[in-house]
Image 1 (tube, rainbow, N blue to C red):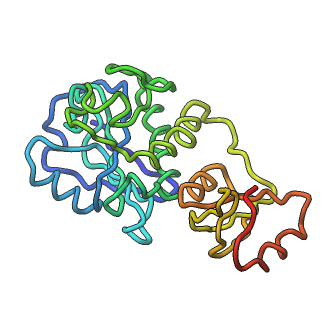
Image 2 (spheres, rainbow, N blue to C red; image 1 turned 90 degrees about the vertical axis):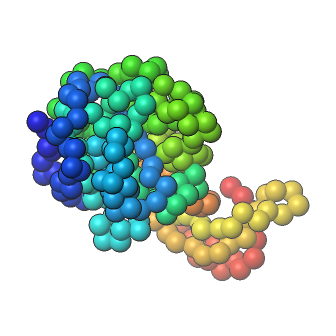
Length: 259
């Protein structure tokens, strides 16, 4: 029986076990598959609770959970099968993530990314057969996401499924989660002076400008945070060596040239 200790988890965790948490068939995990709920964490928990034969091992709460953003729920013993992965049910650990109903356009929060990275590493430490590699076929081993091999595929029977969310969350998975999984001991690079502009997507006739909505300066911003901002429609300006440009940008009220 494996119920995780959440000591060291960046946003905590707890056991919110489903009725069948230890009665499902035993498995020997070689895969981790990331999912999105298309809804709330509590709604998914009750759906799993009341729907025979459907489960996930974990849920990571998100923005709609407020102060509990990034908190991990364990729903199933990870030595037992959870039926969220079609033909990989007998070998995969499934991680669901909360969203606001449209994960195709809503990125994982910084807290969710932190918790996903922590949970991926925790599972590898418990199950050495989950190798630190990108899963590229039905039997793994490694890290994947639900629709990675296509839809339908051996991981999902649903035609057109985009889980955990295309393009936004799949891009985050590839740019943030997979590199962290492959190189867990590498420190995450930091920008020494990063200036980001939250803009709409209105361009001029040449496609060279965006209308400034508001501006915010970020120092020591991580690559994970950058990825999240970029998916929210942010244009970034690295102002290292150009400290005076910050005030000049703030004075602009209409359009600014693209970098």
